[in-house]
Image 1 (tube, one colour):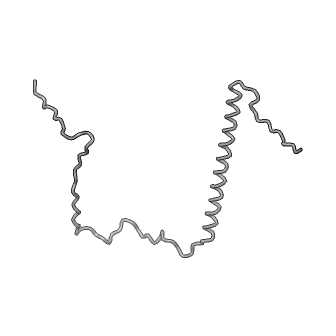
Image 2 (cartoon, helix red, strand yellow):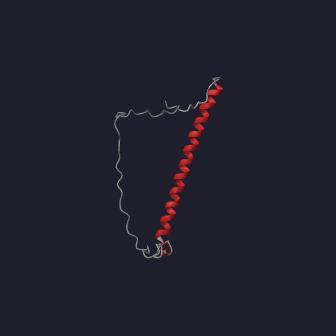
Image 3 (spheres, one colour):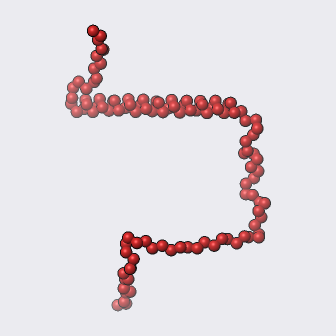
Length: 109
């Protein structure tokens, strides 16, 4: 039977960390690389144009903001309605009676 090497017990305690610093050397400059070549075609196509209608853009942003606020409000209303229905349903399914809220108008004396 071949002998297996013995496992060495490390002298580093579990609460100590061992670290190794890896030196990074800067890359040498390649003389064969063309610095004037760009992988992207002309970027002037994407630059802001001078005839940009600021007022129209701000109106569209305001309309988008109002739409987002309406959607958030609808979501909150829907969540509240679902919670109320769940509470009423839990009350009825547990066998209780008089689960609904009775609104009594306040009388002034």
